Structure formats: C-alpha cells, structure tokens
Length: 318
Image (cartoon, rainbow, N blue to C red; front, side, top):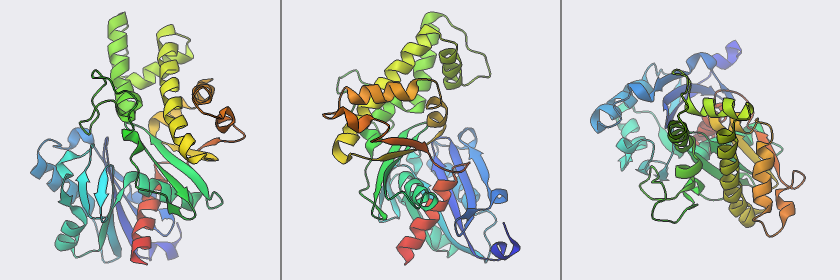
C-alpha cells in the first residue's frame, strides 16, 4: 500500500461470524493487511450477553483514530435498516440490538450493519467488475448466498435456511428451525456427521486434526465411508443449487468459505454436484459447465467481505 493511500481515511470493518470476530481497515478497494486481527470464538463469552457485547466493542473499536471514517459490521442473519440485528444464528447475543445506533452513540462515528452475504457479494462485484449477473455463496460453518444483478443485490434472501428435509427427525438449525440446508450441509453440520460416523465405525481421528480435514484426507485415500459421505453431500448440495437455478437460471456461481475452497478442489466432487443438479432440473443443460460456471472469489482472507462491507456503507451514504 502506498504512503499516499495510508494518509487517507479508512473504514473499520468487523466481521462477526460463526468462528469469532475479525476486523480490518479498508482504504478504497484495499484492505490494510497489517490491520487485520482475529478473536477466535473460543475466547468469546458467547453465552453471556453483556460480556460478549463488551468484548465485541473492545475488539471492534480498538485503535480507531481521527482517520476512521466509519465503523461497519458484517453479520450473518436478518438485519433491519442496516442497524438492528433482528436475529443472528451465529451471535445470538446480538439479537434485537441496534448495533449501528449503539456504535454511533458511544463513539460518535457513523456506522451501519450489513448482512454478511450482502457484504460478501458487494465485495465480489467490486473484485469481478465484468460479471454483471451471478450468485455469491459462502460455504463455511454455515451457508449463505445472494444474487447480484444490474449493480445491486436482488433481494435479502436467506437461502441457507431453505428446507431440504421436512421430516420430524430433521436436524435443528442454529436458527431453531428444522431441516434447513445449513443444518444439513453446512460445515458445522458435516463436522458433526464425521464425528458420528467415525465413532460408529470405530475409526480414530488424529487428535489435532479437524474432522472436515480428516474427511478430505480419507476421501482422497478412497475410503468408502468418506466417499459415500461426500456423495451424499454432493447430492444435497446439487438439489439445493438446482432449486435456486430453477428460479434464476444463473450463468455464474462465485464460491467462498473454508469448506467450499477445500471440497470443490477434490477430484470428482464438482461433477457430483452437477450430476445431482441435472437429475432435478427441468432442463439439465442449466447445470452444464457451459451454461453455469463455478469460480472462487478472488483474493485471500475474505477480503471481499471487508471491501464489500465498506462499499455497503458508501452506497448508503451516497
């Protein structure tokens, strides 16, 4: 980053996700790498509302200066007027809180709250300026997506809470409802499935290995339980995407998220998803690589979300 850019004002962005808090300073379309800091979920008193909110404020507002233009939050969940967090499955201590108003009252700095996928897709659009129509999807601990068309997000959708299983025994989602996509093929759900399956089969995972990383390893080694699990995941993701494709006939899906970045690089897995889509769609060509492209979001460290959250603030301000 140039010295000239460093002298400019910046927007402080805080991402509140299922894995903890992350912050960074955004100058224009650049994120200052040195400003990025993380507070992992293990250090947050997530079940103590007052203490968790205090931790968030301390983390979010640390080091703000006269060059801080605004404080912007990116949060999973339903956001009202870019201020009130009606419900956030990953941070229930924020439910019902007017976080932007609170921030302005206590810091005198302008603030807004963006849905995490709103921020992510705004950032994707900034980093992929030639793509005019696409869906951005995060596949990480949970699942979220938004459709971008004609320089704006089509609607404040919550597709991760689309029902994939309507049975009474369907897994419970973080939002409290049953059978949602996030509760079935979200990263945290798959993590739980791996633990259950390996315990049932008497397979011992390495102590320091994440269950999803172990699943990837065993899949690459051709172990039947892992191959079967990924085939099931691919089938359900394919059905999930086919329902969306039926509505929007998308030309492009832009992926982000830790689970997506690893799973979609596994040999044969993308083909598994497309095969499942073709089996559901009225026109199977809508799932072909020529009709529907897959690509990863550009950049590292979720820069798109930080750039996008800052862009949401500037859009609201203009």
